[in-house]
Length: 488
Length: 142
Image 1 (cartoon, rainbow over the protein chains, first blue to last red):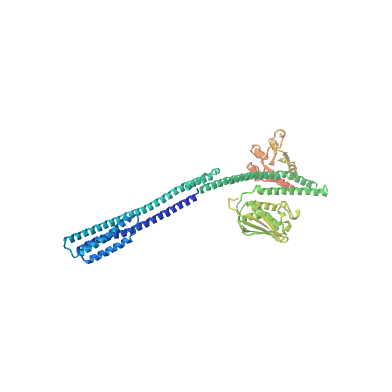
Image 2 (cartoon, rainbow over the protein chains, first blue to last red):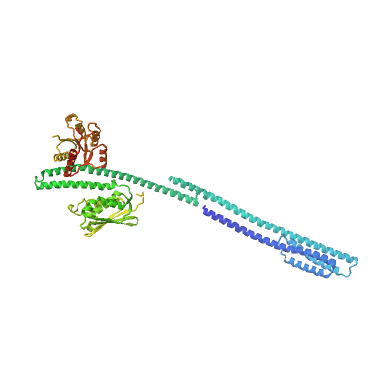
């Protein structure tokens, strides 16, 4: 049985009890009321009988007419009351007796009154007759009085009993209600509060990640439903936890793999750069020695071949250095910390000192924010972008300006130049490794500068794009997300 | 006339040729001896075996990356040996790594030079070395 049913049942029971008892009590109250009313009448009867006796005394002493009139008035009044009186089963016989006595009293009083008013009052027979009628009247009055008293007492004791009954009903009702409520409270404790304690204990166990724990509580009631739902939830928690754990393990595995892969890459890059350098140098040295000893002596072609070989070796060296730098964006990146972008900008200007002087370039910046980043890499970004802005530039003087703007939770940086610009159809290619848009001898450089910038920006979680117009200039936009300290 | 004795410890034949060329164009008369690995270098300096008549070098040009015995070990041994420690050692190597520079000086190398790639620059460096150690610097008496 559900708790709700139980509560409804108790409620209904109490309601019935109250209604039933109420009805019984009301009926009882009516009985009491009637009793009291009847008692009033009975008391009047008693009083009247008593008054008749007194008046009879008065009349017999005085013999005058006034007491007689009074007696008759009292008698009539008693008669009216007796007529009013409604008898029930208890007092029917008494009331009948009273009514009979009443008649007798009336008759005998007539006789006495006549005897008293008779002229002949001195003879013995007259006196004896008077005395006899007096006595009869007295007996009747006495009987009347006694019966009236009995009637009165009968009514009063039954009324008192009824009142007592009323009180008992109240007490019983209160007691029954109290018992029912107490029982119900006890039931609530068993059905609800103890299971709740078990639930609380269970949450502690589950908090310890023991997901096999089930709770067995209640049966067909709401608590039972709750415990089943609770157990389902625990099962779900377990499977969610397991799958999360599996995912974390998978991620850890992938992370370890990535670290290993990065280490392999670093090793490869180092070896490639280091061990390739020596044979390259040898070729270069050999070619340069040949040039020194034999230029002009092996024919024009030979001179060109030798120069070409030397230049190629130089180019290879630069390519290797650039590739190494590119791979080191990942393998030698530092963890991010709060870095002043202005300081990074200033550092890059330092590194570009000679280029700036050579080209008479004007490089400026707006106030730049503090960002969570790798200081070296940020400086490298500015250096590469500013260097491009100066190199690919025919204006006089070449100008490059760096600015920034806060957007939601990222910083947008812009590096703008008044250079030669880039055609729309090329703007995607320029970020690819070694993609150059001009012939080698026109503007120098290997074409890895922008690829490195893109890699650094992406390592920081940002992105990069280019807007440009041929002949006017180029602006490179890149974003760096705003991070909190300690975030990755 | 006395000439300068120079020991070059270098395994790369091209570099040996280039060094030799550069020294030939120098102002100072010099004789270049070459050891191709660390063991040979020490045998030469200590006049062991076939090097019994080896001259004592005035200056040693030492590469760091050598087969058999590594240049750093050779440097350490030279600078700890009572008979050899007063010979100036010029580290002449392709490396520009800071740890190599620091380590070399800590092992009492006299100076550290990174070999330039370009032939002309290399020649100029060799001539500078020669000029510095043999015309400006006073060497310990033999």
